[in-house]
Amino acid sequence: MKRIKVREALELEQAGEDVLVKGWVRTRRDSKTFSFLEVNDGSCLKNLQIIVDQGTPGYDQIHHTSTGASVWIKGRVVESQGKGQKWEVHASEFGLIGRADESFPLQKKGHSMEYLREIAHLRPRSNLFGAVFRVRSRLAYAVHNFFQEQGFCYIHTPIITASDCEGAGELFRVTTLDLENPPRREDRRIDETRDFFHRAAYLTVSGQLEAEVFACSLGDVYTFGPTFRAENSNTSRHAAEFWMIEPEMAFCDIHGDMDLAEQFVKFLIRDTLTHNPQDMDLFARFVDKGLMERLNFVLDKPFQRITYSDAIGILKESDRSFDYPVEFGANLQSEHERFLTEEYFKCPVTVRDYPESIKPFYMRRNDDGRTVAAMDVLVPGIGEIIGGSQREERPDVLMNNIRNAGLPEEEYWWYADLRKYGTVPHSGFGLGFERMLMFVTGMGNIRDVIPFARTPGHAGF
RNA sequence: UCCAGAGUAGCUCAAUGGUAGAGCGGGUGGCUGUUAACCACUAGGUUGUAGGUUCGAGCCCUACCUCUGGAGCCA
Image 1 (cartoon, rainbow, N blue to C red):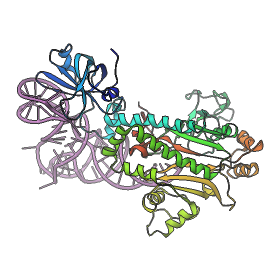
Image 2 (image 1 turned 120 degrees about the vertical axis):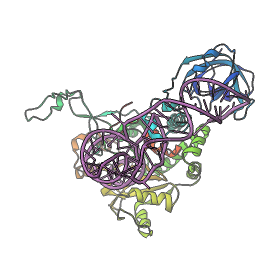
Image 3 (image 1 turned 45 degrees about the horizontal axis):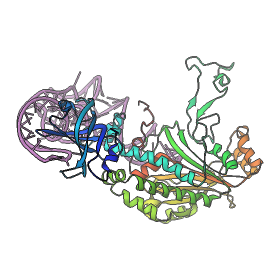
Image 4 (image 1 turned 90 degrees about the horizontal axis):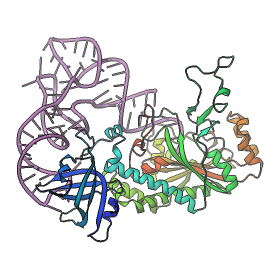
């Protein structure tokens, strides 16, 4: 007999099929002469109800079959006599595979997110986390679909890098040196030339510079992989290890970049709603009551596009008082971004043309001489979800920027070569995968959309 | 890292400075085509840690630890 997944069983067109089901027991309810089992195998949110009659082969094990136990059932799919489900399985044979004793920590009633984090190895067996990680999987698939269907090439940029990119953010050091007794030079400093790579190496913070290399050869490319930040950030939106999506397009300016970002966000939302309706319904009912309204709003409305100068003007003219000053040249703070997207426009907002002084060296300088072609997409509830720019393609301007930023010119020789030989206007952006997942599911903490989250002090699972 | 709040039974939470409780979960028994089942009984505690104030501290004070929310950094 062929095994059938719970999802397939529930989607059967008609009753009468003999099936083999395997999964974990969510709950057992006993009657005098039979028992109800709710079995879930992770294939979907819903459970399959199983009826095991007294006298069915294996029934003697039913009293040891508690919440959390693994089981198999052979039986026939029949129409349910009770309310709440269309089909159920009437068992002809029952088997207990692995017991779960009374210490099994997942109860049928609600647990706090904090408690569930402490049992990260068991929380995917809960309704909520099962849904989160099914949606995470689908969203990752949708990322590839979106780019592949538009002819983008997937580039695997290195996870270990030697340069610290733009000097932004703390990096994790990668080394095979003996930390107890590292080799030292004459001046007592650690001799990095005797490390594995014969130089200092780190975990990547971004694949952008490498992606630019391939954009300037394959045209349209994207990266999708893990990135690392050793920042001591203790917030619901930061993790030390997270996944980032970075498209990079040759012959594309800041406007094409903004178009792609908007299309991309809408595609991901639409795809998730289409393919995971049950899971999304769970989020809408139990996680975030306003979720569907907000997602549909993002789908329906064009993103508001404004310049940084416009944003400063709007913030200054508003009668709201902010904790941080609003002035040209200052970064937009969380409170400013939230005001723009949640209160003023009430939709996603793309802000562009930021002051040169607050953006990194690789962004293209605008003709006004004081702003760069940078753009951030701000969404309600999360804030900045996408950051991107048109890259500086003029060799003289780029080298000037590198020098002004105090960066080691020689480290960027290959990056500069892209401008030396057949330079082209090109643009790209970065999207934090987990931030997008939070926006799509309504989950409020990044720790709860990562299977095993890495944050300061936490790498236990 | 900074600011604020919180740590009490396995879980979620109560408890004027005066005998630590409930619901859920667990165990036992009962009932029922049940569905976060129901009914009865039952076990379960060094109140985060270490000091201090007090006749007396879960409650007040100090330090530390942990978690949460917000901020900074950012994606």
